[in-house]
Image (cartoon, rainbow, N blue to C red; front, top):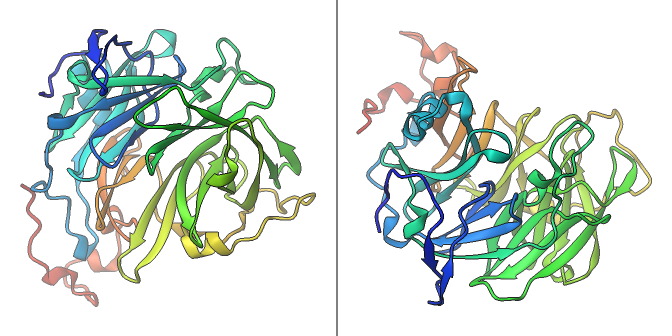
Length: 405
């Protein structure tokens, strides 16, 4: 199977189990995830489906592509003007390109983007990959394919300020030990949902409704969805760590997320009112061996939360709010120097990759690598050590010249 530069169309595909089906082309492409092998999951919120594509031999090893110089905290800009580059292969103007999500296939370090060609209900959905510094359209029609419905989702309803509610039908997808966890909203009154489904897909799907105490609003909430989530082992217990719209941090043992259950999530932190979470990504700090997650936001700095801190965090008192209203609260949050981040994932133990606005020109959307564990690129900043003849207490200038292949 090869990656081709042809736009996805509907065609007959084959399920992994071998039975022939008529494939549905992507009505939309949002949340992305990989299993532990080569299957790419695509959230199709408009159709209320999760698609699974076995990319197999289409995946290309990226180990020879130089990502930066981690020992001196230097990353690499893989693309400047990423939207312009994608527009060129789609044959549209850059303003018609919408980048919805990004995921890294960890074994190969290959980057994948879910993209809309155009805006609104007629937008065309495609998946774009980065192959050793080149953009390519992924030929999904050549992949073994299966899909599953997440159940009833909103259709024409809108939120207060006009956002179509069906864009929130699938907000995030995570793969954990043979099953998918899919967050989003339904068309029911108790609309915040978490769906669990085994993969390979069967007819089995478990749907839980989730209620939380939101300290900033000082009320119980059942509608606003999980925006981003991950699974962590907290004292040996598999636990969903979820960041909601308007940024409450919540933990829920997976054992409570059973079919038909109305679950009360435990709010353990607040990331700051007037903000929306974007991504939560696990990582290990190679300097001290600690396990952590990093959370990116629209209107706040990124923050690192330790797994130890999440484990020990107690529920924020119900019936009490957060004061002052824009404060962070609860579980300890270590701020990280990332701004303008749109999408984030880790490439390996040394680097993350971000879609971001350039620190020098916010009109420039970059695909850029950032060294771990501090998610910090020295080249983004002007400091004393940048000047010729300045002190070099960390020995950065003694490092070999950085030459990208």
